[in-house]
Image (cartoon, rainbow, N blue to C red):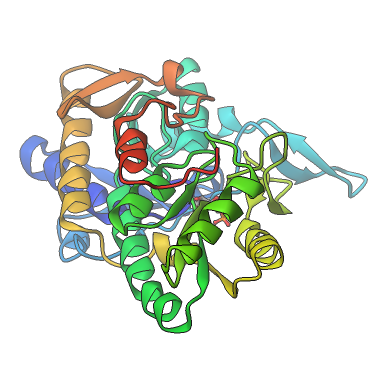
Length: 355
Ligand code: F6P
């Protein structure tokens, strides 16, 4: 099952899980459609070796995904026609048992793994695989999908440099990442952006404007500002674009680039434009590294299962594959430590973090 937002490398995991399970261990594999929604609605599809051929390089997920279904809080119509929330996790377990499914490989980020920890606690055998472009899952040094998102964002910023430079503008680029600044930090450093704003380091607008103005005075004709969607001013709040009431995490961030560009233009009088990269970061073919990581994670998930291990998340720690208990991962977010070496390296090359 693939749950949460789509992410490059999902198909690499599905392929590795299915091929290892079938060819090495003679297991039968079922795919669950559209994440937890398919589990609730009993939408299971047998996966053969052929079904997962030629999908390694494809973005998205052949199974479909869903980031608005929470089995512990599922909306159903009451007799009076009112929508009420029900815990349907026992129904999910029954659905799996009816199909004689012994174990669930749950490919997802923190929302998905928080629910998978609930299933594990209820006695289901679960192995989690860490997915997300945000790279914010607790317990692993890296999630698959992150490298592709950083590559896509870096390429986009390289392209935006052209217009920034030709028109002598400040270009503010908003990237995803939710409450963590991993994507912004990495693509910011990789693209040589002048300012990087991340949720972990609240910024002061005066500092950003002063930095950009000083660059302009020194004869630098343009500036590139990368801002994580979760970045916020000192004492301020994150910019919310909408609320999805039914989602396990209902807040959708977005809009900080527009806000910031307006402020920078007003204060510095330098022509400023905003660009939001959005879902482009989640799309397209996975990078070779994400294909490798997805394949390694998928394979490790089956090997763990066969060795009798259960209720753990496959992780990459210090460049080695291992696993951590799902119960430890649930409900946590891995943000960037303030003394992270890449922040230090960024500061050393005179990048402004707005603090
Ligand atoms: O978790 C992946 C992610 O793309 C985040 O970076 C972003 O905040 C969120 O999902 C967007 O969610 P949705 O697809 O519901 O708009």
